[in-house]
Length: 331
Figure (cartoon, rainbow, N blue to C red):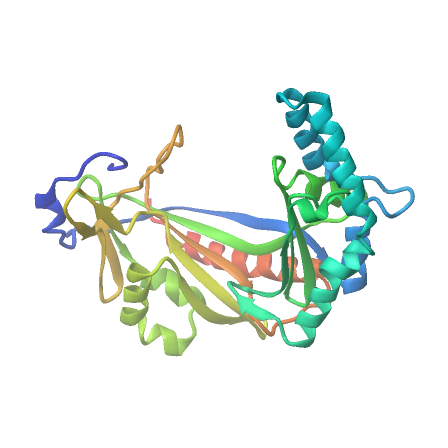
């Protein structure tokens, strides 16, 4: 297969559809999780206060990690103990001026945004995205990002800290006895290579499992959309609930050399075909086969009574689709 190697321009100028069709060889499933799901904004606020050390009997050790690491770096620098002392004085001065940080800097914006309808993007309604630096010294949000979104009727809180990433968020999940929020339930369909490092995937057998009839009649346009964009978002319905099926291909669709930009993935009615090329970085191993991934997520106005109900619904949708797709595997 082709990964980071150079592709000869002569091949790039003459990409044609292989005579042999790629075979479906494997179907697997996974889930995408990120953040913590809550039923109400009151629960979101409580979680933020726990993270900030305001709730008696609750403690998230990693919530102060960012400031601790910065102090260590300053202590190890030429500034030494004097630098640490000045930083602590500055932290105390800033924190003394922070009045109810959780409400004034985060929750007030969340409530205003929800009242105005928020902003729907990439499967979620975004209510607030706050990025704090030295203005949050003396709190657990120093050099951190806090995002609050709404998906399937649940509120999702995400916290990302400099130096330690989502370590604090994971500790908060354990402290609250909560579960990570599921953002999508995914199936992965792996296909064989043909004629060396090429592929020729008939998209219709998969697409027909979740696409509405009006989209299925326009499959040629949907295949073009998938070849020209990073993903194909298809509205669907399962158990009388609306959802979205987001299809992606694990291959680079374009190739650059010193002179030109070449298109590696093309379409022909119901098929995706081209040269299978994946640019990898570092020690990452390149995938051996082309894979179409379908991520099922709730539609914008589809609500559930709880995040658990939403997760179970998405899993049922994915598992039923995966089982039907597995029946198409031929030895």
